[in-house]
Image 1 (tube, rainbow, N blue to C red):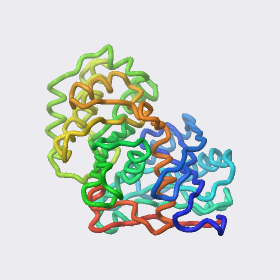
Image 2 (image 1 turned 180 degrees about the vertical axis):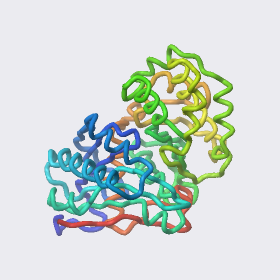
Image 3 (image 1 turned 30 degrees about the vertical axis):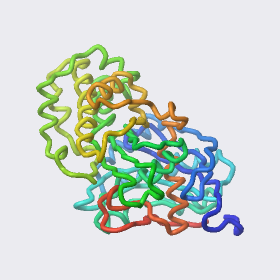
Image 4 (image 1 turned 90 degrees about the vertical axis):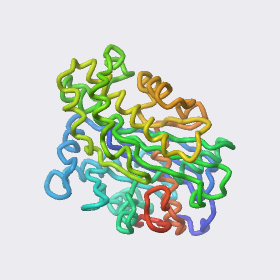
Length: 367
């Protein structure tokens, strides 16, 4: 890193994210000082091959062993291949791939070796963002809320709004942009809403050999089974007060609830479950948000977006309508958080992960 660049100065940071939907690696440049966004830079995406995705699937829910080791090798190789395409940044924020998340039990596991990336890329890498938060009593997720606060400032928001990320798991951030800093009381509230794309993707893969219900085409042909939907909403998780978080596979009964339905009805019902979980989350909002900006793969599903409009009563928009990139927002978030770690600034707080105090989690590896 250039020695002239100290705390509070602008850095050109490369963030990378591999989400629970297992589609691939997102990478994006962010120009930031860890508090303000100055500019958004180039981005790129590398999909996982079918073989790589199968290696990752086989390791989901595991903490140790050869499957976990192989998954780590896939994650490292994919990230190095993608990130090497960028001009060398000042810093890299590397999330890795979550294989298991049990904050009240064994902790949280993201595979990927930040030290190996630092050597390969020739620049410092910040990684292992979640472990410190969990060790100090937090959920370890979600971690994008502080960046969502910066995004709200960037787009000039003046009224409370929500950012909804629909990846494998859904998470929501309520932002009050009238506050000065994300760690200020009342500035942000965040938690996982429930399953999102993961059960839909898993059903499509197991039944039809397809990675997703592209454009909601199959759900559009189906009918929601309301009995299954009501059983899903009986899950105690929805009554828990936030902050709260989920593992990708925390609702294993979802597939069983739709197993007797036609493929179209099953996918329509799984999609409705995702939307209903978000609607339940609205009961925890401090005030009704002015709008909800949707990021992640779920925003590309018009059936899901319409279900959200009907079930939440909110003004639902893809984040692109506000000038943001829904494909790269999480990668950009980890670029932003990497600078905060380098500067010793908090990356989570009691209202985002339930941690007992402000935490600035992350490991820094240098080449």
